[in-house]
Image (tube, rainbow, N blue to C red):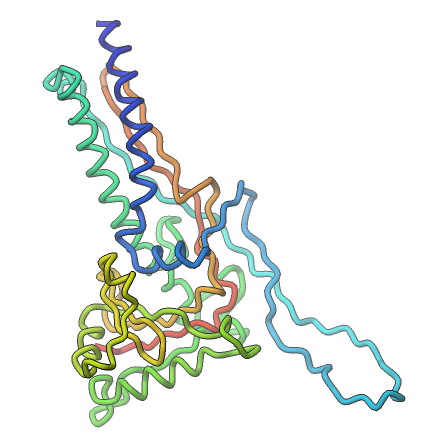
Length: 318
């Protein structure tokens, strides 16, 4: 029995080693937001620390003025920056295989397949859960997703949004009433919201990169477009993410977005920080007592949004 334990341990360790590379390559195939953050190079590896503390610009300078080559130049200190502070968050998922199941699946091929099926299920559930958390608030220390700051009344990264207007998302009500619903006026709503997000200095870095909404709102707008108005990003369509372009901004839908919400995101102002190399760490152990196999996926991460005023939300789009 001892010899079999060593053999199974070696086999599953090798399975795990070769399989994890495939998992790491495909984790973003469930998430539009995660896919786009990776594609734009917004994944940042960090080795830890008690929290994530950054220096961000919170206002523009008022010291720009004319000069005639004779005027004295005075120097005045301006407090143009603030230091938001993000706590690290994490996600975990695991599976346990009882000793009885190992005994039922004896043999190299059987135990290999059985272990791989368990890992497949664990990773699928983990990817779906990870995607859902990207749009949520921070519940159970999971991650500060988009809903963590979209109300403009929360305390996000230690700064009260209700106190500081520069720390607010550009919010637009999609429902203007009986004679002006999102269904009748979505063109005005989308265009107005996109323009509102262009805060600070001019240029591409202050423009919205993508929009993400639920399937119902997306289909509503998509159905109103003519064929020559649909300029979706081909590479993303081929990857399984349907989209159309609105004023040059690709618009997607995601099943985990809160119904009626339409997020307008400037990815240059966002980063996904991880406390390890890559999106997550994985561990796998095999034991033949009384729990025979254990598989674990762990993450330490945080979605860091450094400029809320360049992000937008149209709510009540349903």
